[in-house]
Image (cartoon, rainbow, N blue to C red; front, side):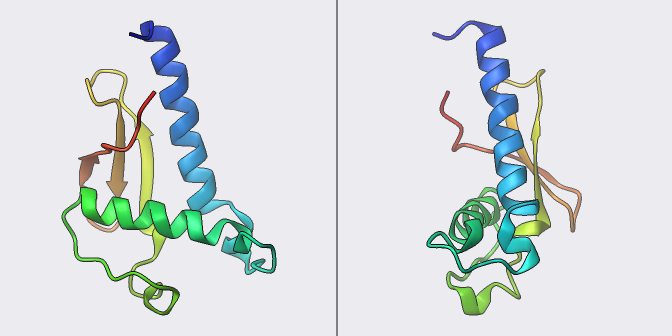
Length: 103
């Protein structure tokens, strides 16, 4: 079992990483010529999980990205909760537990 301060630090770094990959990675400005497509595939993976966390429909694939934009979601750290990583749907304002954080 991790000490609370270690868990907190890992969760905060994880949240920061998710938000960077979805909101600030090179793909967000059209730079997709790298082997990882500027982080696009990671952003799509996070988006799929975020849609599932919110029990929303989701269709995989780049051609569906216009309908399922990863930037719809923002990850947050909630120190007071047992499941301390959450994802906010910025379109609805709803918060959901993020079950994919394993410290």
